[in-house]
Amino acid sequence: MKDVYPWEAKIRRNIEMRLRELFERWGYAEVEPPTLEYYALFEKTMNEEMKERIYKFLNRDGKLVCLRPEFTTSVARMCSRESSPLPLRVYYSGKVFRYPSSPFRTESEFTQVGLECVGRGGPSKDAEVIALAILALKETEIQNFEVDLSHAGIFRGILESLPLSPSQKEEVKKAMKRRDFTTLQGLCKDSNFPSPLRTLLPRFPFLRGKRDLLENLAPLFPENEKWQKAIQELLDTWAILEDFELSEYLSVNIGLVRDFDYYTGIIFEGFSPQVGYPLLAGGRYDELFQIFGKDLPACGFAIFLERILEALEKGFSWKKERYSPPVLFYPPLFRKRVFRFAKYIRDQGIPLVLEESEKEGFTLTTAYGSFAFEELEEEVFERLLKGEGL
Image (cartoon, rainbow, N blue to C red; front, side, top):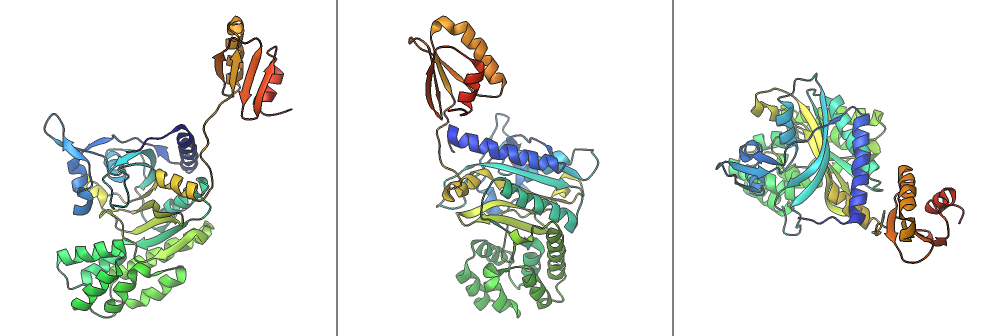
């Protein structure tokens, strides 16, 4: 769990404010799921590895509860009870909790800012969500990033065609997620894989490119319906993002595998060279609402705010600065007038700290320097606070 100091809190709140404004300009409204949920809610949507990373415990009624490990499932539960017209566009900002996935990372508490578009499917809605993901990264002022696209149907289609047991298929999935070339090569060598999978599968973690990569991959499995459907949906979504004039930020990453099993369509992650973990992640999950008795397609993403700050710091986009508002030192004799004067200044939206001093006269300390004067003149004072006329 992480302490947040003033210099970081100010930057975080500024980024959150920009993202909230961006989402609301696109018609998304804020929701706030509870921090504590019943464990059974996530047990239905997570693989065994993710279940082990959940903070779970018994409440005083003896029921198994957990700190929310992610927002999407909680938001889906909320939206399944909502009777508003579709599509339902919502966004959120808050903490999620889960044990680290790697011994090289120590974070167990994350701040996620994200959104969900519920009730409509198809490439147009996928492209809308991905466009917002790209615009959100631009709002954070990260200078160098890329969004990788893939499709859950690509890997699903391949797994179904493999002559492997369920446990072996899970091993393949884990190797794909880790980009473990050696394990994949060994599985292909030891198993009776059909061609061209024997040579293609070990290369999956490294299959990255632009739109032409999708066009080249389409003919590889002409009889695999999931493969063909996935490639076509990626091509259609890419075309719409070209119309958004955002395709320069996109790459195709066929080896992309998400942590959660509920994804059914387009999946994507955002990366920066400064950080070795995704800055954001999301995708389409058209089957998740079925556990709540609804049949609603949906797509969304979440930004990991701490990773954004890490990328900004490493990219020298900002530096740690101690927060130091202007301070006015005043003699107690003028306390009433100073309080009235301070209210006037603060009402202008200018921060001001008051400190009593036994010295005669007034001293103002700002980022621009320290100034001493005999009387409080509002016009002069405002210019000093703003650094004007020095």
